[in-house]
Image 1 (cartoon, each protein chain N blue to C red):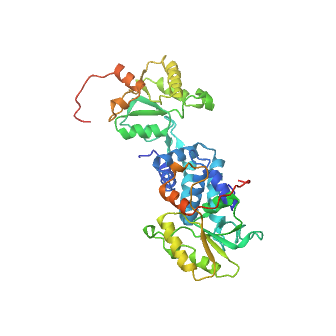
Image 2: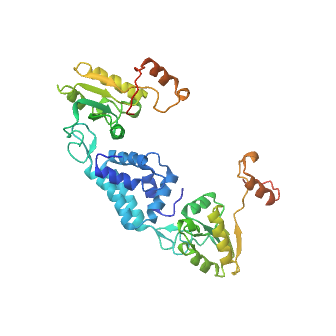
Image 3: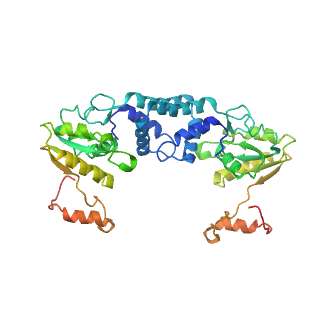
Length: 205
Length: 205
């Protein structure tokens, strides 16, 4: 595209460097920003500057936080004997939203993926092993994606954590709540038959 | 969503104010920005600051430009007797990319849309009429979208421009090049039969 202004070109280049945003969408976003009041644009850019300046990761669980230790790790009411290992901050959000989990987290920062040049040393695996060696930790839940990379990481973690005394568990796989049986894929349906659970009538859904 | 940091929340709020970007995508973009080097983030925000500070609209055609008069209006080689009226800068880019047009443009800045509170006074119609009254202008091409709002604007412009001596024309409508006939919608196909053109074998496609 041949833009009428080099500033537009630069803004489009920068905006299209974001994941999932192509040149056309970037131009649409740039034109939208251009139409706004200067204060609004300042607020927009300032929020990104603040994000980079003030947000760090928690020194214990590596979740994103603006304090040294995040609000979950510093919460005395949570069960510190339970650690849920996830890929990134979005998984923490998703699990927190279920309101079914009261333990702590450990954010790996990704999964082992040789294709993308991500090895075990790029993830926060060392600190996870240090945490696991503490007596207070009783169970570690591996809650990574069921992709090939996720499974590789699960296997690697299993080998590293097996010598310690902690119990290892993983999320149950099965038919989604509300799904129709004949739409479920074979693998999931197969697993949900093998891992069937005792029938219970639950009053509080 | 209940974020672990208020800076993340602010960045997500700001990013999701962009068109077509929801909260989830905004979070993905914010996490992507957070992973980058500080210089990269600075370059990103600076490009948006520059956009707002340096980019204005051309005083003649209202196209976006970093000069007082844009490169198209100031180009002596272009046919100044021809003005193509378009909605926004993206339409100028699209027509320029065809390399079939050598006249000037007039960017309206939108179309008349009472539903969105956009009336004739919010558009650059007055300056278009001023331009049309000059002797040098011979033809005005109305190249707006064929939506209800576009048609309304076409009709309004027609009424305003009819008293002046300029010739008014519009883009031809018909089957797209490369389209199969039976996939074309009835309206387009109908118009393309009514407005059929003499058969010509063109060597330079």
